[in-house]
Image (cartoon, rainbow, N blue to C red):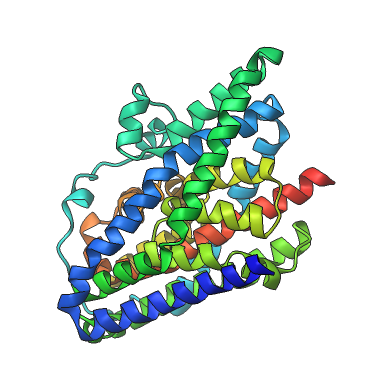
Length: 403
């Protein structure tokens, strides 16, 4: 009962942080911008624990199983299927609404980190699978190579028989220590979220300016949100009900802390500590499954990002008056699905991988300027769906493993 009330207090605190952050950022933008430091400290605290969490969780879970086995194959199949469904939904919605038809050019300056990705290709995504320097990857927050290395070390340790008991004890103790630190950071979530929301809205010029931009790009924003809603609140709950044998409403309640944090931070990687806590401790998914599926999902399973990129690219084409053929739409489907895998779980990483999709169908990357002003807001919606999809994947794999 005490845990129940503690959880409810935290959720109430997070909601309060979102509301107060919105009010301060909207009506007192200068104060909101200054409050950003609070959000940055919170976000940095989450990111600080993410890499140890991923390395320890994956290595330990693989070590105990002995090899990647069926759980890895099932997880990847789940990710491929749900990502493909999300992209198909995005293409259907954007071609039905046609938000870019008759759209007046709404330009913005491209950030340097997007300009530097001109020439970005599938090869660059594949290169992230391995790295010559794990420490450099950790410094640059490149998670995929660290996951691959953790899997390999986990398999190697698992093959050592009785010799690995000391290593297992070390990793189990490290896992407990990490989760204790996670709980400490979680206690600061309401304050951190207040700073993030107030700072972002304040930097955008206040609530009125955000609303004005959203209205100018109304049909585009509507297309993205409708697509995300269909995937997040119809398709994924059906998958959870049919293949996870879980009540979607109850499961959603269990995930409320992580989903609110995902919306506030716009980072599935930074949200990972809370996602793991909610899935394993609150939703009672097997730790063996949760500690493998969720870190992998935070890197590879980007349903919301894949859907968003498909919608954004077709919107850009429509805005330039370019009709994409069926073959080009299929190319968008394929590249958006692959690009989502390469999207690091950090804020606005989708802008970088969108370069790949635009170039695949011969569209200028300058088209990103059309959506730049509202991307930070839509980033929060798509990240929430990313985390929701990861959590449902854990429940589905957990149920399949039990049967």
